[in-house]
Length: 131
Image (cartoon, rainbow, N blue to C red; front, top):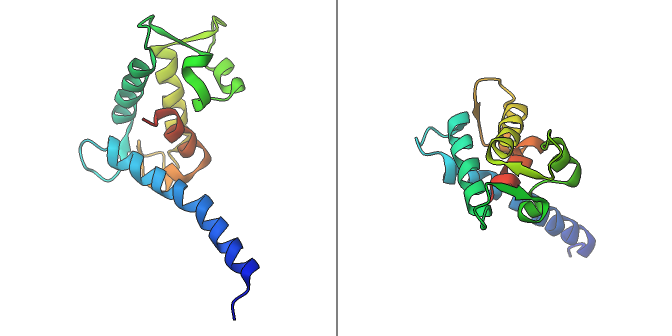
């Protein structure tokens, strides 16, 4: 006979871990335009610029806190806004993606593997770039 508590714990663990693994794989699959099996900085910059354009529905050239939504915490938003304008320009938004890329690049080889995307910085990058 099986232990229901152990089964529930395994199921809950899978519910937490599997979406994160899938998210890393999905991001890699979606953004890896050269099919190298990893993401390079140019692929991430292009994706960040495209996400910015999609979020900038009023075409004002900046994103406010509401337009960013849950992609960045309040603290991360403030850190990404060096001029304290309360908005992020496209350059500031892309700079966040670059910073997360560099933090997640564990091998310092200029590319992110699926394992790199499972790190906290990799997950934050995936959240920033989610479609």
